[in-house]
Length: 253
Image (tube, rainbow, N blue to C red):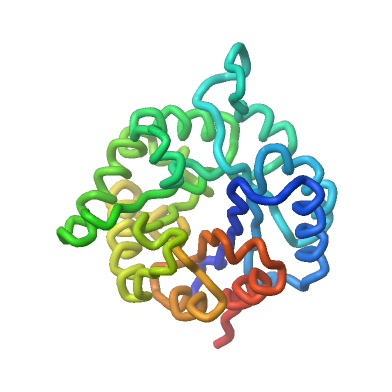
């Protein structure tokens, strides 16, 4: 059995009304979550407070979907990390492919990472390639370049508790899924990169896979040596289905 506790995060993206999100959170709260798994949901910013009221005191934790690179101030439409911190929400997704697609560069993500670390938030840092990179066989070099440009110059002592999420863009919302072996291959290289920066963290930090994850493929992905969890999109909007995915993270010797 792996030493690292599996981490299963449901990213709701821009879905559900507040009422629907609260009802989904209530349905999830009714499900038993094993202590052997860390279960997290990432609602939209508007949902965070009411959903937090639902899940407080349960096994479910929360993550924000993004945050500003700036401190609180005159930044209309943005959400400061201090606001997330003030709600005692431990995690924040940074670098999701959809956010990168809206123009978030590695340089901007470095600033966001630095803000998150300064506030004691734990980033779920996403990296991944599009289909053209994948077909050219350049996945590893592309992913490692994303890591180096955004995180490489930030002192490793600040990384403690953060997570890495490999999400091949060509497998997000397309029905296509990287094979478990593909996920392992990339996760192994990410871990090697972390290990070169800080050997201890290379063994401690968790690496997730994201991309058309469902209950019928979750277990095979989680069984891979260097894959420690899942970043789940559409399937996390169905309480029963997401509960099965979370359950797939329970391993017994």
